[in-house]
Image (cartoon, rainbow, N blue to C red):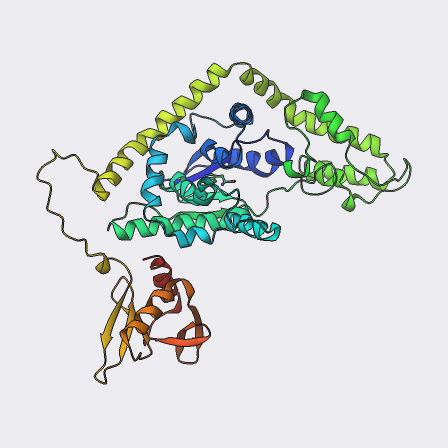
Length: 440
Ligand code: TRP
């Protein structure tokens, strides 16, 4: 089976040069590799979390679809679709929501950042926080596991979301006792270009320092380049290429030899005006043919709609049978499909990691943490009373810190040891078992 690589693009803005060099160009190139099945989609449900301006969402979907295609994405080769055309995704989101502990979502960076900002302002912690924002990682998990993606290329800010997707998928697999989902791996793009914006900070919509990719045509591209901040050195004065944003931008689009030549000219005193003109010509050379395709696509939304609907049909060929299997697994079954078995309480405990409590001869209470495979991981200290043992057991998954010690490892609560490792147990296995029990 080919490696499935999947990534989503939130449809809230107009793509700029930084998006192109940092995300679009590398993704389009990667999608042509052999042995890879690429899935690219417009995350338009995610857009609704961030943006309540319908015109902006609608325009962004159009611009992003046109941009990716104009930049060379081949919809025959890649599965290219809109998230909101895959009806199975919100359905899967609900199935996953029902197995996701609230405590896991409480830890999401984006949610915590909102809560912290509210605390600083002295308002209610959840002020302005929608359930969309809170559940954002579950929708993202559904995007990924719907297609059993193996690899998910994203920026660093998305790493936690990927960990959550793995966690949620793993819980579902254990709870319903099957390999329903592949656990996805994050793929951090280490060496893609991060472009400086007009003011030298990272090019970003939020800094208002972007160079447009296609919108506004060659004139807007040139006008933006002319606004790039430089030092005040005059023509004829030698310039330091390394500290110049112009040079960094140029390099992201030129061959090594071209970059070297550009650098020498700067060092020999090329004026900033001429340097900007050279950068403009370099960029225009790469972008002009794509812009032509972009303009043609924007002018033909019916064609774009057709391409995206064909992509959705291709994606749903996989999603429809997958969701049927999942509905079956959770008990949303056709009543007519044979005798419906009388409910037997699923033996949840035998499927995943679990705690077992026991009583010592001296009357004290203890518990053990067992791995899914039945191996013993931790044994607690003796407690005088079953309630205390129960309380410690409850707190352990989300609150314990594991600490390596001379003869194994220990689990600590409030700085005090409450359980010690079993002989031969691995700390990673104990951590994984505890993680899997959060919220149980
Ligand atoms: N959250 C991602 C971002 O902001 C976009 C996204 C939504 C995504 N669903 C995804 C990325 C699934 C990868 C896989 O960049």
